[in-house]
Amino acid sequence: MTTLPEWTWEFHGHRCPFMPIGYRMGELMLKTLGVSKAHDHEYFIASELGVGHPQTCLMDGLQASTGCTYGKLMMERLNFGKLAATLWTPDNGSVRVAIKPAFSDKLGKYEFFSYRKKGIEPSQIPEPVSNEVISVVLNATDEEMFDVKKLSDFEHKKIKGSFNKTKCEGCGEYVFDRYARIKDGKHLCIPCAGY
Image (tube, rainbow, N blue to C red):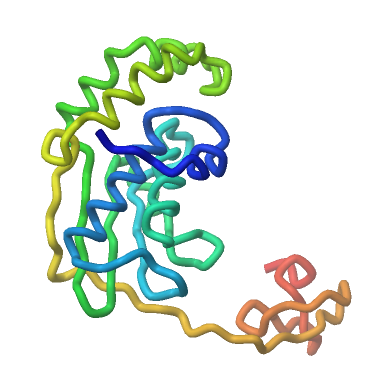
């Protein structure tokens, strides 16, 4: 049985099956590539999920297990609408991990999803109902849950960080130079420039 650090549940805000799926997915990615959790900006995750998916909770699990956080610009949502993600590392290659359709079908039969389909938020679902499906996730094997494929052609171009900034001549707030616009000879932020 897999156990998650208690802080991951607190970070996520509620108990559901997809945050631990993401956590396990991230652990499997690291293990497959033979790397440890990121501390700075060394890796990148391309999540294939989209907007409006109740399953996007798995991205919190990915962040928690890999250290690839949105705040450090180490994760991007591709909006493919798929339950998969790719981890890129500069020296150890890349790996794509996807939830197996059979495992997804198995999960969908649990009462938890009947509540979710009615629009009931995870924190409002009775704890025994949530714990039942979470237990399935924590007790499944990696082989039962995931398809894993090392990728030789996945590329990620890191954007160089910059501390250079300009004061917007419209609103007076600082804007980082790569986002500054020039309009009518003035240095402006995007909202003030209108484009």
